Image (tube, rainbow, N blue to C red; front, side, top):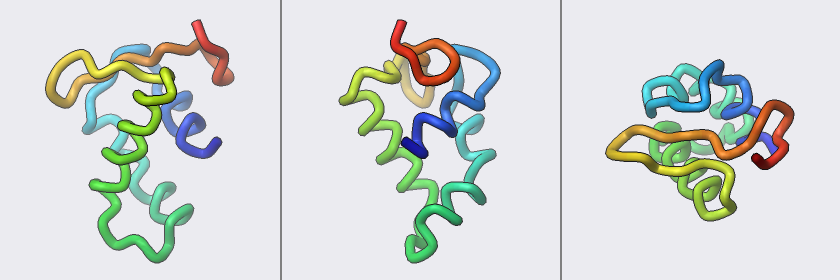
Length: 73
């Protein structure tokens, strides 16, 4: 799953939205017809939250709920 790949690349378990926005170009390549990449990233984070891969800790702050290589903790 491409979205897990992006989150897995982040070096820390805790991260902020700005950290994910650094990968906008990669997301844009995966979604070439989407010209609203930042909203797409937020949508992906919501989907990952719903699947149990990330947790929203507070506004704009997140925590990974899996260990390296996409395995759940």
